[in-house]
Amino acid sequence: MSSTRIIKIDPGNPREDYFKEAAKVLKEGGLVIIPTETVYGIAASMLNKKAVDKLYEIKRRPKDKPFALLIDKKESIEELAGAIPPAAYRLADKFWPGPLTLVLKSRGAGTIGIRMPDNQVALGIIREAGTALFCPSANLSGKPAPVNLEEAIKDLDGLVDLAIDAGRVKLGTESTVVDLSGESLRILREGAIDKNDIDEAVEKKTVLFVCTGNSCRSVMAEALLKKKLKEGNRKDVEVISAGIMMLSGLGASEATKEILRRESIDVSNHLSKRITGEMIRRSDLILVMEKVHEEEVLAQAPEAKNRVFLLKEFAKIKDDSLDIEDPIGRSIDFYGQTFRVIKEAVERVAEII
Image 1 (tube, one colour):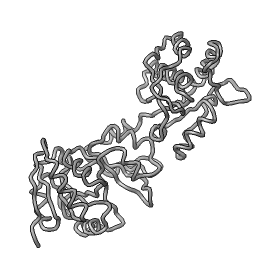
Image 2: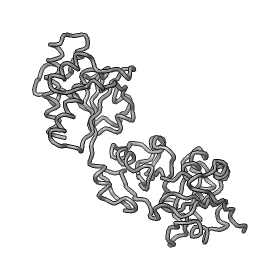
Image 3: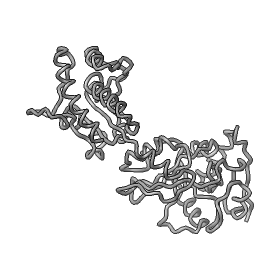
Image 4: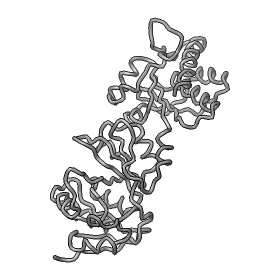
């Protein structure tokens, strides 16, 4: 059995050609020991069955226990997982890149663990490989997870094709593993991130208001809820708004600015945004002005069905329609009427979130 080739890398100034060399080995079905910020791991391309089978053999792991995947950008989470809960986005936004593994429902069957490491060498190799990498810790079963290459190569020399030596890892503690694949969050392993930090991140909710152009109704609703939450010293809710039309980057309408100015609210810096599927999936509560907005939201993200409501459902004012009409092109008095309905509904929303 031949020895494993070792490449020593300066972690502060890693050479791109070493990333390419490691990626070539991975693409060809080889195994590579790589550093992360937590511990050293054995990487295999998720696309190469032969490499993955060898990884299971080395780790002496049953094949019904999948390895976690390392990714190089947050957006990859949507390529690998399905039915992603809003809490997963909040945790990824706060802790990625970093020592957090999220267990989510797979796009296929079962579940999948995903992490974006905080290590430039690991990220560079994943990027060059062009795919997520299975990467369990670089130790044999029952041995401690290695914090430097000397510990990793001791039992694995000759079993892997290449090893990257980037010195001692930054943390030396394995990632925290959070399972979001069920009805409630479970911490499967408390590692570098403690439970209190996880709970604090998850407790924050996101409310999304949706109208047509994101220049009047959703702007009013967003501004009113932000004001209400500030008055109550609430910091556990993020409020955003968007429109279903193509235009982005426009300001609030002049009438909207005037109506909100009377409430001592300044929206002169508002810029319209077009709604996206990711925005919808990140939101815990989605409040729309008209049925057509609900239809667009669900067309982009059908899994959000139980989180979408017509805003007027929360108002005491009842009439034949639950739509809040678009005031664009109407009189300032009509804007005022629209504002009063939105304000009444938003005040109730603030009480229940």
